[in-house]
Structure formats: C-alpha cells, structure tokens
Length: 196
Image (cartoon, rainbow, N blue to C red; front, top):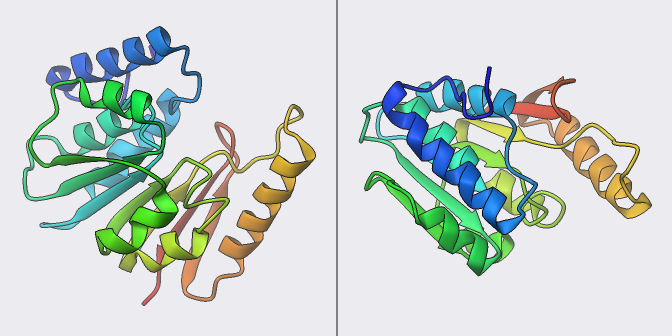
C-alpha cells in the first residue's frame, strides 16, 4: 500500500496527497503514518450521527484527511483539528476540505476547554497529551473513543521524552473511567473508550 492509502474512497485520495505534499514542502516529518490513517478512518466511520471528532496536532492535514475519509459522504459529523504552529496550520487549511472541518491554531491546552465534548479524539501532539492530558480526557464524551499516538518508547527519544511518555501511559492505563488497550504497532498506540 502506498503512503496515501487511508482506507479511503477514490475521491478522497487527492486531499491526502496534497497534505503529504505540503508536509514535504515544509520539511514536516511528523505526519500520521498510513496504518494509523487507516485506523483513524475506521474510528471516524463509527462516530454516531451528529458526532464530533477532534484531532490534536493537525500538522499538514494527513490525519485530518484520514478522519474525513472515514466519514465518507456524511456531513452530520464535525471534525475540529488543532495545530500549534501557525505556518503549518495554514498549510493544512490549503486543501479541499468539506464545510464540516474546522481548523484551530493555538495551544491545545488553552483551546480544549472552549471546544466542548467529542465522540472521537486523536491526540498526536505534546499539548493535550504530554501537557494538559486531563483537559483532553475531560473533553471525551461518554462512550467516546480516544486514540493516543507515539506511545511505544523509541531508542532515539530523549530522557525527557521517555518520562513524558511513561507518565501519559500510566495515567491512561490506570484511569478508572477508561477501558484501554495498548496496540504495539506503528510507534505504539493507546486506544481507550470512556465508560460513563
């Protein structure tokens, strides 16, 4: 499978290709990989009617493209995505997005309390994961699904990065209100569902 495969409909592929081209032009190397993209599409497809999806860490929109692809032709669900870096966020906006996708530029920790509750949250940035995880968890609706990326320790990580990852992992797996599984794939994922 090629890098733009997101379990997508053929009409969605150009959006993913543009997001990858923006990443290459910026030298942005932290885009969601194709396996995570396919999982995001599956999770987005399961969001209930009128559901809300949040992506923390837009990058150039590769993960966003996967989420939108999973929704297919649905317009009843919304996708909100947060990017800290204004230039990267502007590149992400420069794509053919449907009207139900909303971009936010700023610190996720500050923005989270203003956005409401979500049925699916994809956390793929330090803000809202390393810092402010409590705010991310507070934004997860009852029976909402949380996917946290980059949770398997890597040899090249700094000691600080390892400490953040270990703390986030412990907080997630010990949260009594979450049913959690760890997926040892593509950099490590933690998938959880809010019980209440």
